Length: 420
View 1 (cartoon, rainbow, N blue to C red):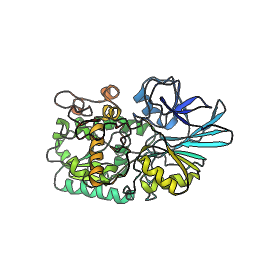
View 2 (cartoon, rainbow, N blue to C red):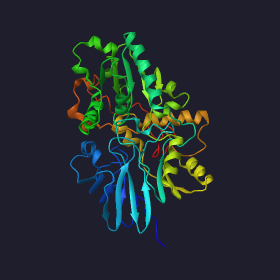
View 3 (cartoon, helix red, strand yellow):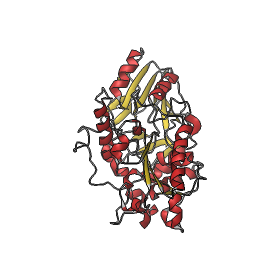
View 4 (spheres, rainbow, N blue to C red):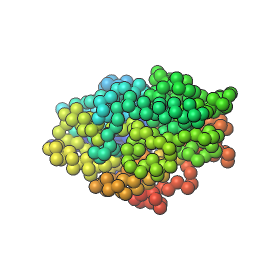
């Protein structure tokens, strides 16, 4: 009897016949990395394999590592395992990992975006999710509850544009916060740039350069220091990471209307807990019907669920007649994500509190922020000038010591390793 193609080990998800890991969280000799977010692409591995489309971001985050890249769909054979990478639609360079060995095909999804609205290919910031037929599908479940259903992209951006336009007509800056890697670029690619100038935080611009280098079309953006006429800021859209809220960097946009873009804005009370004027429901993860669409499109007989609402998703899959189980992973590590963007612990705790208060879960799985991904201070220091720092010299994306973290008051359950 043949064993599973992917199993759990303390280091991460391991492929025994190929002797390599997928997105391992402890140092290993060989790592296949699905994308460059901090909880999936970690330093310390001997050799890395990833999609060519994500090479620029991976090297910016990991430094000088032994990195081999593959074009989407390009196969390689490793110890008898045929491996290829396929678009996941999550962020630039995100990939599903297809494994074929002795007639069996398994696919590990990593993080992916499929929308129940059916407009998966409408965002030009990365290649859209590609269904891959397989016997076993390892899927994320970040938004694996029926309450999570995304609006069509055009309808969502019509709302964002209307908010920005109204603010500009009133002479009020529009501060739109979203995570620097992936979310910010989705926002920039979707808004109507004719409304006014677009100003971005340095952490966002660092990632914008990587996207533009990969051929992704983004509207012209300015750093604050590049705005000669400060009166222009009164009509500007300002895109920045969530950690700038309340900072000296943000206070320069006097009278700004602020908003937060996240899948967690679907929850009642999330905007109030964030303390922002508007909340826009925008995610780079699949919603509930999107998860169902993606799983069905694989034609799989077995599903293994990872980070998110594992218990809910496993139960639903079994009710559909599929064999379903869960892997316990360390994706969504609160401390890692807080280090990358300065917000992870706080957002995880706030979202968990909202869900618990509204009785929406019915599961012991974690919940938290959308995936974070800005380069941390060590990676981005050369790309940030004084205009991207608070008055005390601290990067606006650094960790706020006042943020509730794992196990802290208001921070949700003590074990937040799977918080999303």
